Length: 298
Image 1: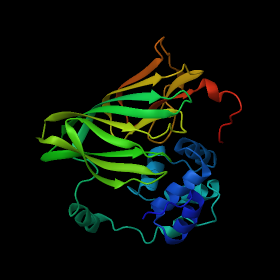
Image 2: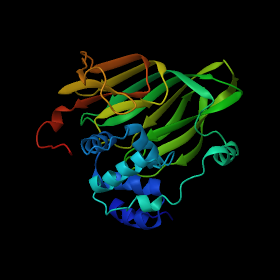
Image 3: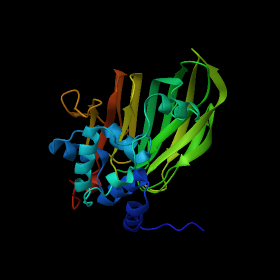
């Protein structure tokens, strides 16, 4: 029988046993800060780091190794209220680079979706009256770069509430590599038919949360440029405010900062970007019932 420990108890154990990614993820959960707020605090301290890098660190896809990354990690430990070197001590020796690293990578399955180019993304987000996200339906159009490709790897920050993943069109759910409370969901979306170099595929999937999320925002991080990104948000109750925002790969705000997004009479708002990335693009809002008696974490 699986025993679920409270986050603080889990963090205490992970700071002793590791691994680094899990310890960082739970430390962020316990502190209650979004990756954007962590990035801002590090930037103020003179240790800029991208939101994408923070996401990769806590998901285990990458780890801090460069001198500037280790400096940012030291500040991050302080921001998270941890003792000095609490996280860095879990890193162990640096990973091999050069030829030995390439040999090691070539022996593994390509879980990063590197054989595909994302050309278009369309997200539809359903928002509960409290302002939290109830679910997200996503449609992605991808083109194969080389060889035969039969899957896309979904990497989705889940927060404390784990969503149910459903394949809607042209794919099925395969292996789920990481699905832990407060972490990141990594799963295979296996295509109905493999595609080869130059061919494209449109898949659709849905994430439904058991309860609305605490974050009143939705965004996408693009490691490579995407031709079209459309984000639609459907509100159950009209929000007090709604705005779109974007940032570059280093975290710098684009478009002169956030700008208002109109909500139509049916409670829908949308934002669209063309030839965008690398960077982050999204929308955030304030729910009517959260305008009194609530405080933001800072």
